[in-house]
Length: 186
Image 1 (cartoon, rainbow, N blue to C red):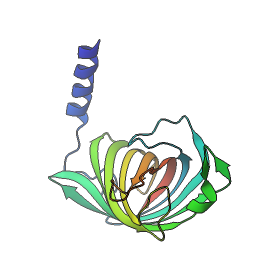
Image 2 (cartoon, rainbow, N blue to C red; image 1 turned 45 degrees about the vertical axis):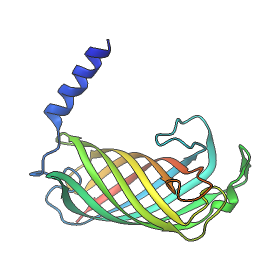
Image 3 (tube, one colour; image 1 turned 120 degrees about the horizontal axis):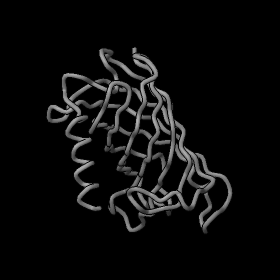
């Protein structure tokens, strides 16, 4: 069964792999704006299991331009975000984590079809204040994205997003979100 699953994944990625002649994020457009909203998860994992949803949310605006990463289509972005926490759950006072953040990111298309894409992204930035959950203002971000193009200008994305200080401080419990958003190309 494991060999069949690996063979199937290899076949899908080989036939749908992303090439630089097409940018699945933006098509022929050179600018993109996105609005994302995320639901917090109490997890320290890079890809968090959705088992402990918490009263912690992410509002996030992103401006992007097309680029490539070693001939793979990509987008480079500047991001402004706001986390919103309410109440206590799982031993954390989520009100303390209502903090604005700004970061730069790069999303790389791993596979795509005519109307869909799957990508991963990384980023680096700052949050306005440090706290006992992250222990630093420095943010490193990892993201997995699935997108569906409604038409050439609009797309819907779902994502898993993880923020961490990458062990640059004694505390590193991370922020993690499951979310959705809209993108508009112009």
